[in-house]
Image (cartoon, rainbow, N blue to C red; front, side, top):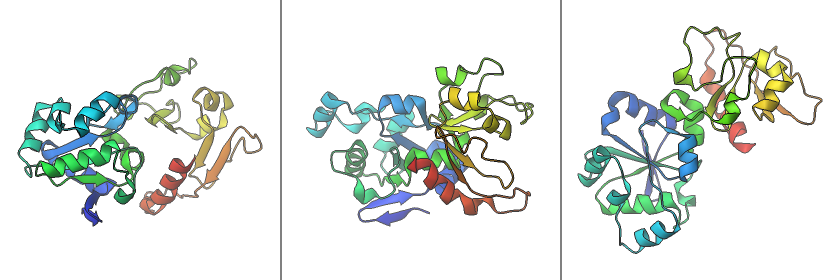
Length: 247
């Protein structure tokens, strides 16, 4: 369910995922981050709102409107028919909408949407939280770093993986541009960690050792999870997310 904080309404990552699964065609996703960040990772179907310095001045002066910045005809139609769809705005990691300064792209877009008759929702936790909780609903670009492991198969995004690939031999996977999912085998291999640029390791097992704990190059945190197939894993999501965004 969406909630209100001050004058801005918010939506949680889980609620947005449900909206996308149930009726994606009626959900407008506006990514208010720089183009580079958007290209690295974004929610599937999102439209990037690029307000570079010159464009920002024209936008704030009213010389161009929000529809002029949207490339998707479908999204543009939904916005111009204010109220006909759910409009979600997100940035990198904002959790409190009241913390948005008035000159941020997200704030400017929210104000513009309201004037158009829409009721925008700010995604709590931004792409950081959503990407951790719902990686399958995100699009991640393959970077040169991901192709660095020459001894094994190339790391890929979740949607590109061979579903028949055994998890014991599968390569590490970039869930987000800064977040790598790997196995115990990967955690044990220092070369893999170095080539993927891993510095912080979240160990979510009860038995897997922190192999390089004495090496100052790496920092570890353990969340002991017994994955029996019946344990409620969601109780650990918040702690894991907070660690991922804090390092």
